[in-house]
Amino acid sequence: MSKDIPDRIEIEETSEDNSKRKRTFEAWNHFKRVKVEGIQFAECNYCNARLKALAGYGTIHLHKYYEKVCKKRPRKIDIRQSFLKTNKKVSGDQEVGTHIFNQEETRRELASMGDILKIYKDERTKYYNLLGKIKCRIAITTDMWISSNNKGFMAVTGHFIDDNWTLQNCILRFLYVPAPHTSEVLANMLVEALMDWNIDRTVSTIMVDNCTTNDAMINHLLQKLPTKDMPLDGKVLHMRCCAHILNLIVKDGLDIIGRSIERIRDSVIYWTALPSRVEKFEEIACQVPVNCTKKLCLDCKTWWNSTYLMLETAIIYKDVFPRLNVREKNYKSLPTEEDWVNAIEICGKLKLFHQVTEMFSGTLYPTSNFYFQKICDIKVKLDEWVKSPNTLIQDMALSMLRKYDKYWEVCHMMGVAVVLDPRYKMSLVEFFFRKIYHESARFKIDEVRQNCYDLLLDYQSRCCTLNKSSSSIGSLENTMSSDVHSNVNVDDSLDEFEQFVVSKTSGATNLSATSESDMY
Image 1 (tube, rainbow, N blue to C red):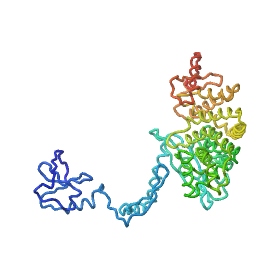
Image 2 (image 1 turned 180 degrees about the horizontal axis):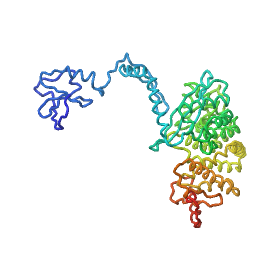
Image 3 (image 1 turned 90 degrees about the horizontal axis):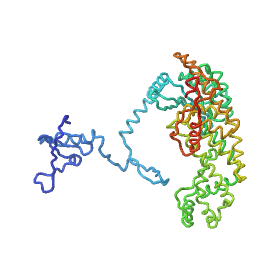
Image 4 (image 1 turned 135 degrees about the horizontal axis):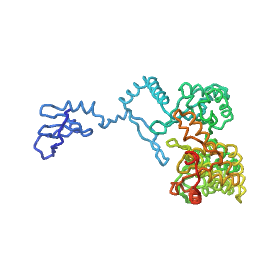
């Protein structure tokens, strides 16, 4: 193959009228003749590589290049080496296609499998060194998995920000947890994983679900881990998973209309059990008529999100089920009109929880900065629903509030993340707490402010280059001056907050701040 070929190229075209002998060799189906400064070359149709094509060279070298070197050549399809596979379309439909077996690619993959342990060790060493060099703390999340044979496993994941300010996460260990899964056993397994990676002194928080065993596990961890190296001596070590909290809250609310949900679920099960029933359902839906943009979906009882999606879709076809009841004698689980009214009322309220859960479940962006706002939004809505004239909504809201209040205290610590957000600072905390606590709001606001001071003091005490002359911390009696601009970017749910900031800023007086933190 030639190198440093000039860009001036003359392409020699051929036609049936050309008196020269036609190039009938198979190789010329994949190459074309080009002339570069009077020299003939064969240029590949796929990768544009050029090989000499002088008289007497023949085409053997072209064949070899096409068969063994060119990586962009079209693959030869051997019907004997293809097998059927199911391709799922975006719309949810499925189609049957073929998958081509590639011998060379398979050999490469099989060869790499022989080095799988070496690859694992190399990757582990890379992340081990990375975790040892980063300057920030590491947040840990744990998840319990149960296999088909009822064996327990714990997934331990580390979350941190690298030196480029990029959010990173990696699975540190996937541990087999021997039975019984007591709090002490779980704590020992987690401590072993943290020490194995030498991050037991750099942990910031550990997030677990809301199992009572996991709550007790935290007490054992505080005894086994070096709490003197943790923020506030481990007082903020335990964090709860908001997605799990919302799951518990909504499940309590859904129990209020449990019988209505059961009848709708039974209908969905019946009409999705067989392809013939699905076809009949779609046929009747077209007669009603209903636009069949979504397919009926069955829920998973352990996750309310799927129940919400099942109800949302079933409501679209609520007029189809009575017609099906007339046409199908074996269909015995027709929901009543009251069931549909209940489902519509509940779905309208659950939409907020569904949107918040999806937001909290994101993995490609940080979520702590909007945790406080969304949790407060839910609190405000629940307080409104308790006063609803609909007794069903009242009962649901009361049931949710009882569960919500059980975990509400964590919101005070998460308010620190909002204070550190320069768009909101203390103003968002003041705005929501005044709506929630009314007369006692000042004490709750001071609690969040004190949490900020405590964390600041803790980090200052660990900093060897502390400038004592500028590090004094104001007491609770000092008023914090919030410099929040009126042109801050907020979403639609914060319109009222923006008005609050404008009125607060216009009425503010010149107050002296005793420290840099107060000025912030």
